[in-house]
Length: 255
Image (cartoon, rainbow, N blue to C red; front, side, top):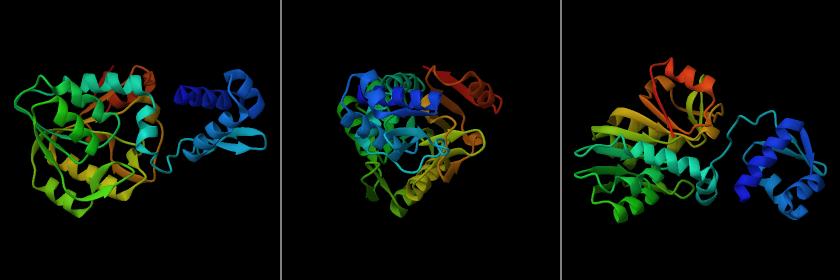
């Protein structure tokens, strides 16, 4: 409910250009303290600016400046992520060796892999390893490296070196931001480097991204859109975005 309310607040602020705490509290039937907390989180993610007694639209609302905590990210757009994960799992075949990236969208496909055997899963994500380990019979390879607490995954030279020795059929990748000009972007150099190594290790690159990530950008480039073979998103992906992506020869699957 919190994340849904914050999305609605953001929509209202963008539509009107500004909004007052008192009016928002009345609209959503919550306290002014709750609204101020909502505005603080939306400002932290770069989506608006707090102003005297309320908030205004941010000129940098397309820019992603940092990675939100795992629990907060997991709650964002969860129904869409669940549908995306289920659709992505249908692209896995018995006998595949796949890489599963860290991310709250990619982890949603893990539980849907239980009927696929044999299967080998390579991952740097602790949440993916735990879910796949408890719901599938797949051979599971957990990449070593330095722990990134913000991503709940391993990163660094050891992770990248191991990936450089692999050749897998498919990588299922997540991203913080995606747009036509910059492609996949991130805000953390170490995470971006691991994603690049995953792309190099796979014959087919499958991107799992909910529509809220579209037309946003971080300051570290991971890969151009031309490096993606399949994009799995939700039905709220704008029609013009789908047209532009498919024009690049990328298969688009909407769930």
